[in-house]
Length: 501
Image (cartoon, rainbow, N blue to C red; front, side, top):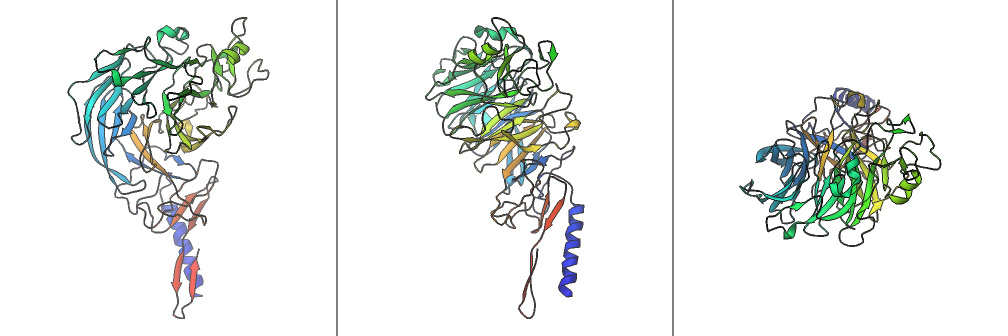
């Protein structure tokens, strides 16, 4: 009878605890983490198998970010400059800001950031130029003067200039430049330098004369409306980009803009080997990737097929399919991908989707993951399920005013994912939850329920983890059911062992 009453009491206490917990989708670390930040909007939903926590607030439009050789986070604040952020790292997702230092005060910097392999040269970009500074991570300082490496990139509308310093081809700096307007006919001329990705050998740029973007460097790809995210596969060296495609499109007189064209993941070959697709034209401003097949004269087209807006003798669906490079993957229209980062082993690519303005029903506003094998996406080119949600807003109808908007990504040596939200001035950290075969957390991991990549809250962690919550696991499944588990070992006078689970 005693144990029956005890069992009922424990269950009641657990249910009460579950009701009293803040319904947040970030990791529940209040029991051990000294500081747990909460967003001012509805808490994000964490995908199955992940834990997440808000760790930085109060930044000014944070965009690109990376880690220096000492583990500090360098963050571009759009229109402000670059800050240096250090943390008290208690393990897991329990990080507390220790100090924020203004590293570079420059209102022209807006997104791009890179660091040399030795950690001693910092690169950043404005809408017109790419700069470098000598960087001292110990003194937290840069040189008084900056060197201009690439210039002549100024245009209206799409003004970010993403930077990627190749690890497979040392000294090669990739720079992405977008179009000057939604439908930029000038981008059809290679000589304009717009809607292109080019690579520049900065190892021989010591003469002080900057490269001219439109006419110099190695052409990686063009016909790319606004490929803000660019990444190099860490194993194969393959170059991938994610594309923000066009708005307000019509095909044969019908408005198709709600679900077309799709956003794109494009492949650009290798800097250190095969030039497959390298320098190719990906279609913009004449050809686009199909997402929703409810368009006039769809014929045999499928997801990812290149299509023209009108059919003529010189430009039509056949021309688009034959003469331009099709995307490797296509995503839902208007989600606005801004960054792509690979895990160390290249098995996953994380993509930030900043969110739409050009749909009746908002889309994006989330961090997603795409599985890779052998240096390429696992899903076929016509897949509609390649991107799996990792962190998302529970109600996109509140966006963009009252939700997080993912922008930049960085992955640290432990595999933790750091993500900026420019609209809210925040940084989140996420990590994979380590789940044992029994379903209990191990090694700082956690239990999880649900599936499908979204809607699962993971908060149950090992008692040795800074995110532990007194051994109690709470998880919210996709159907909203609160699941609670606790195991207590009781030893009676007689030596009998009881467990409540």
